[in-house]
Image 1: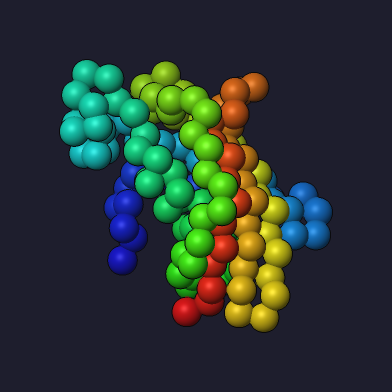
Image 2: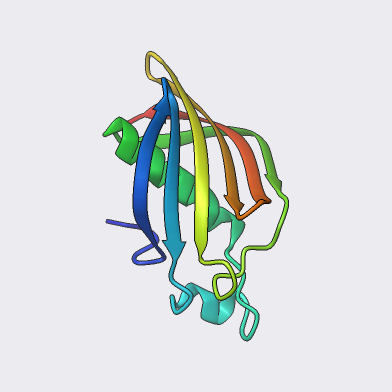
Length: 123
């Protein structure tokens, strides 16, 4: 089951170099999450953005993942889905046995909205 259930659409995901990917997504500004976060001033919740990174990584690797640690997570700009629904996710994915390390930069235009380094394990 998709936890975010229509929160975003994955428009494209390209392998740009070994272990590096660039994904384009579009947030749905009408999604029910935004009615409570926040009414009249929608903001993409950080935990949802982290889940999108996990979802996209799972699609790339074609395996389910479990978050084991988040070493560095920086929310650097507000993502308002009415103003900037289109986002670019740059992913650097390294696998080592059952461990997966992901470095992500999420941006819109020239603005970096999220930087994070997380560790997953295959489940």
